[in-house]
Length: 395
Image 1: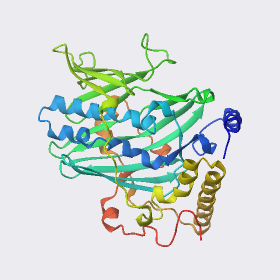
Image 2: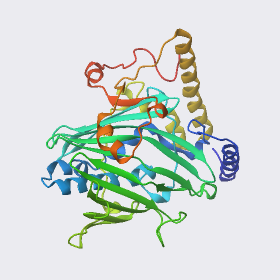
Image 3: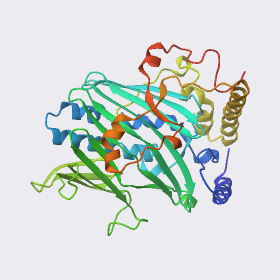
């Protein structure tokens, strides 16, 4: 068991060590007491936690309101993405570094919306890239995306995301391309770190609307008198930013208000504390594939929950050592790891149509390619996904 004083000492050593490193810190190992009890590959689940908000755009006949509901879905997921337990009081923990080939497979069952499913996979390790695909067949809503998280330190831990996501509504044949914010983890040395976001980020719709989202906080230059986790957004016809149709203002970790600008009317006050998440369902550990995240990391998570930091470190090191040996063996044999559910694509037509004309840049060199869900791989996939190979042993 680790004492509080030992943790503080280890934290100071950790901060001192990363302060001396220039460049990406994504694969740096953090002290066990700073670790979240989940892997980075599980984080796309935050997009699915409120199925009724996810499918709402598919049920809205008005094109402007559909775009606004997509914006609501985007904003409603931010708190869970940044505060990994969903509660600010718990602070921020570093997720476990996902290993190459790691999978997270889950579903959400809701009486009103039907079944929502998710497949998330670590498709690259150097650089670290996570790809995901989620869908609700009943309402014809599907989304996919990929992101690389590059971590740097300049007094705060900065998590820059490279990649994008696309939400598709089958009924209206509409696409909504979303860019991703940068997170800044503040107050690390106080023992109560918290996130702030920066942007701007955008949602570009094939129906001709754009949402622009801007962030500020207590430690940022920006909006006068900003509170922690402040967000302001506006939705407008693409190319007419000076004449917004709707605005949003508040705190993405607390509450924010949607307003119809033309009618000068408040439409909704969304309170994150009053919007409970729907519980996800995963297979029992003993029935999960060896490459599924919760089974693979079960030893680490068990030790973290027990407060046994040495056991957590040992279990984590076992997986990391095995993964290094796998990469050496693949290199020696001239092989390349093949993701189970995603494939590299040569182009990104939705990005080129919606985002590129607005000055957004695609950076496949930073994400080891453009990643898309592969329906043929999905149809052919069978458990065990990688035969007798398991992530904690290279044999």
